[in-house]
Length: 277
Length: 282
Ligand SMILES: Nc1ncnc2c1ncn2[C@@H]1O[C@H](COP(=O)(O)OP(=O)(O)O)[C@@H](O)[C@H]1O
Ligand SMILES: [Mg+2]
Image 1 (cartoon, rainbow over the protein chains, first blue to last red):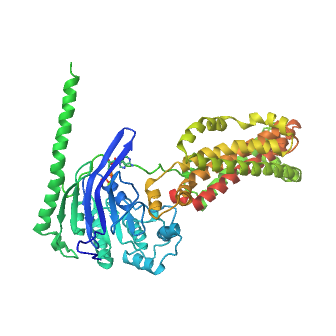
Image 2: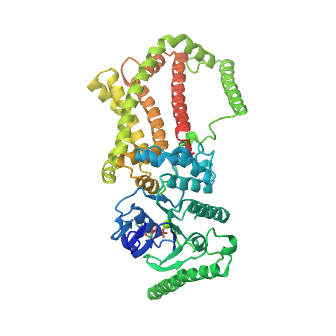
Image 3: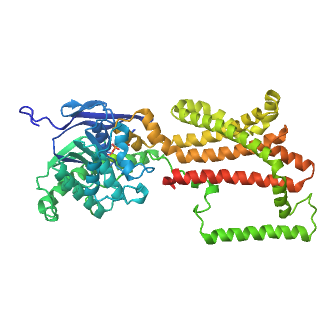
């Protein structure tokens, strides 16, 4: 996919800014974020809650319009939802009135296309959901729902998969299982993945690079390379290198937040002082 | 800092999801699981036999005259004996109920679907809808009779006016339950506004729509019968006034029995539809 000397990123984020207009005034959620995601890469985005991760991901998917800046897919600007981009939402986001089969057929129904039965059966088998097609979401565990959501997102064979804290609501064992599943799927398909999480461990396990965002407004604070070979065993994850990297990322986020909290505290006490006669 | 490497969550405002509603939220439906076990059914039947038998016995022992309260056996006898005479009136009431309800439900559903798409229009219309909901449409029947005569028309209009607003406010509550993540999901596949309506908004609203239809149908039945009591010579409501003026109490209660059966049938019908099509939310 190398066209020319400079590699065109699969997904390019160029000085992306997003302002939400709310009743209580404008809110800057993203501030000039720039980031290149290359083909077949897994990039994780970590950052404190409310720092604009979902905003960034929805913008990448074309669901949100940026206030300024641009999103480029294969060098072409994304101005609306694109079939090459699959999304796994923060909660599994299955439609509760449809059984699993009907949920996975949903994208095809919207597009008026015939579902690719063999591919879907392969995916369902891959995530260990064969035989569950007739079940409704409420009959499935959180992990199973999220696996179904992954199948739905992959059913249209997207070249980019955007995942928004997909396992945030799962217990840690299920989460590790799901992480291995994502790794397997990636080894299988080499789909470019942008993975949002607030778990640093998850980010390091999965990614080629970890992007750290600042607290609101979200800016790219740092980008770390994660040079460990795949599949990543428990032994690799227990090495000192991983431990050090985890701590450095943690310091980035905490160190950034602590002065801010201090500032707020001082601001508050100043107010209290002022009220006194 | 607590253990683990997760970034602690600060105040995380959970947005989106409309509150859960379902048929089972209605107190009428809240009587536990729909399917009753054999023992429960038997117990209910035993209670019925005891109550009905007890009433029968008490009325006979104390020689209560029939014009005050006829015994259950006399009511059942009158029901079968008088049924050929009552049947056309039942048919008349059912025609009013079905036509009025159909008109009211269609208009109510359409208005709910359209109005919830335009929050501004909804704000303007809301007080008028409230007036329609709270005004007993029976009060309009004498006026409607003056204008439209004694036939079906005034009563069908009254039934539609009673059922429509009930359907509308409940359906509107359903359509207002926007779940931005589900709509985003549809949009991510390039869904049109119409597709989003039919594949996301309508199914999400269905449980509330069914509640509205059920309440609307029962209000329609009440209004139909009430309207027949006000004037005209036909319908179950007319039978009630006629039998009571002739002090034919067994026949009177036979009609009451038919009316409660109709009400229960309406309830059961929508309950079953809800179980089949909207049970995902229960
Ligand atoms: N539709 C919206 N309207 C107004 N403010 C929003 C909207 N979506 C998100 N925000 C605000 O923007 C900020 C970033 O939100 P989000 O992208 O969801 O953060 P994250 O996913 O990192 O938790 C938050 O302060 C949030 O309250
Ligand atoms: Mg988020």
